[in-house]
Length: 179
Image (cartoon, rainbow, N blue to C red; front, side):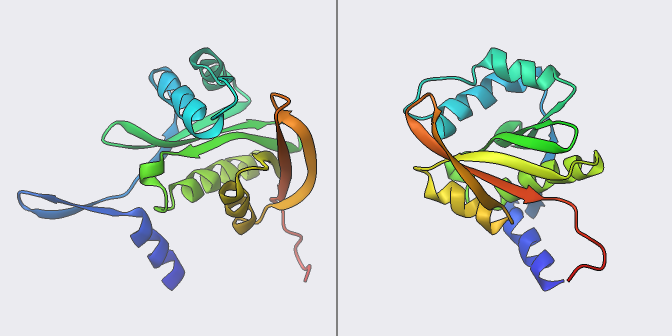
């Protein structure tokens, strides 16, 4: 119980207003067409840096409209602070992108987005989630490891033939009675 309360405190932001203080708790929601450009720009700046721009606004829009894909966002005062894109298959889901604005990191927003997408996958009967992280991004790799993902291989030149990727996976199902 104490850890849940600590996480809630970390996610909350206290703000002052004329009558005192209020707490703002970020909510996850599905992205809409108006979010496509901002998500694409965040991908370009925080995920695809140094590689060119692959997740353009039109590609993000295609993901938003795809029935087999969830594009989730966390907003505060109308600004997208973070997003995640997950495509669902028959037995596995692929986390395509996850990013949080650098000024908003260390608030647990990435964890909230990841958890929301994983719960959606579990609800859909998905067994596991697979993703790739840039080998030159130890912070992202540590984040995924901290959230139960294990290495399952390396993909040479995954990012535009220039940067290797570490493939990570997480099983979503637990076996009853195992242990």
